[in-house]
Image (cartoon, rainbow, N blue to C red; front, side, top):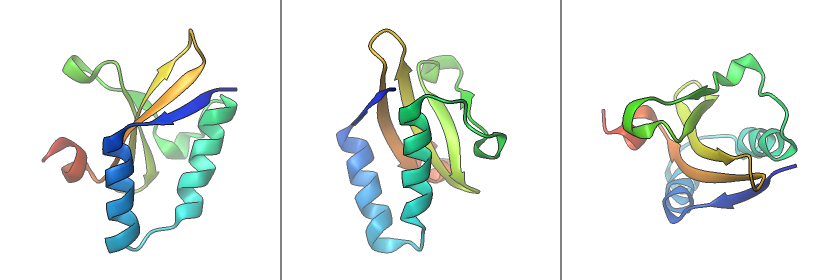
Length: 93
């Protein structure tokens, strides 16, 4: 099992989603539970390692255009939740 930690950026972005957008919090809870347990995510999440200056992070799709950016640390069995949002929210595109 992994221990989950969240960054201030993740908490801020999550709060923004809770206030202003229609979304299903159960979907995020389900994903976080899968990450905590440590099993491979189903292919529907499109989980993958990022490249270049973001290579420490992984990205997965909670829903079509709702992404979770996270960092997995195998040595201390932890997952740091970096950010959540759309492609535009996270990458500014």
